[in-house]
Length: 382
Image (tube, rainbow, N blue to C red; front, top):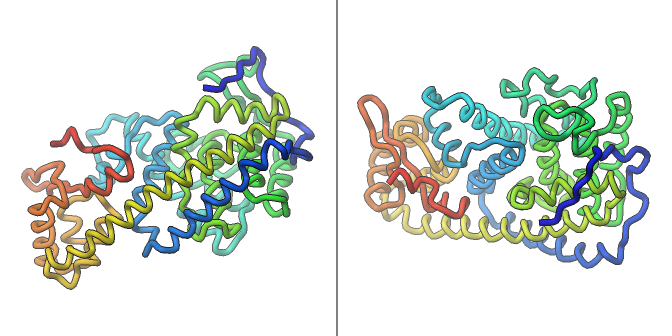
């Protein structure tokens, strides 16, 4: 793993944004492949009916991984089971806090997508999104949606500023710096992905809020790709790469301020986009294939005019209580109950928690979840 060690804190790069030059000879070989994979992935998105529903498990996984980079420990299975429960009082507080942060990530992203129907990416969008991200979770007292008025720094928990690994821009320069960042969002540059790389690095370096900066910065990536027309839907999942390469991710960001190494950061970012676009394409293709294959036999299995409606519902909520499907799917209750029984008998749905007393059984569409997570996240339930 590529690492840079520094005895003294790295200080924000005053006067060096936006960068005025790159080593194009080094960068250019990575621009074309990254853009090509983004275009290929966008073509697939256009072929997916109701991508927001069918790819919603990927959005949940993105929220899990982006939050994990910041230290949360909840798994995708725990999040989905928690949501199916509605209120898991038996979860210990730290685990519940992790899960609420992940759920807020999705809410914040959805709100940002809604705002972008009326506004471009701007400080208002950033602040409103941050307010939702931090609503009623750890750090909610740290002025959600409001830029910090005091210094902050990045480093081991409880460290002093002198012991920090990075010191962002000072609070008195923050408003001016964020205004400059916003102007750069709308400038014409030679390549959109380079522009996005610079925007992400600068946002992380400014660290405008007291908490939640990393998650907002990563959320900006699919939002920017969507706003600029590179993706028809803001459904790009890059945190898997950043989480797997966390050490280099942070050190490349610090090297921007430490060594003015925008070129090294941009190459890292372009490679991340290219590799993750391929992985996103592979998973989305598998999900679309699963949907098409399942749809063929679904009507024959269920003998119901509601088969496609049921299929969409289950793709959108791959872990659920049987009572929720019966009561809330919009399918007549006797028909909904019969559909569930058939899907369980055929092994399409797995019962991960049996009914007990007044509690309904919990069901999971494990074939879909295996595609998303790469493993059987409910193997321990067997």
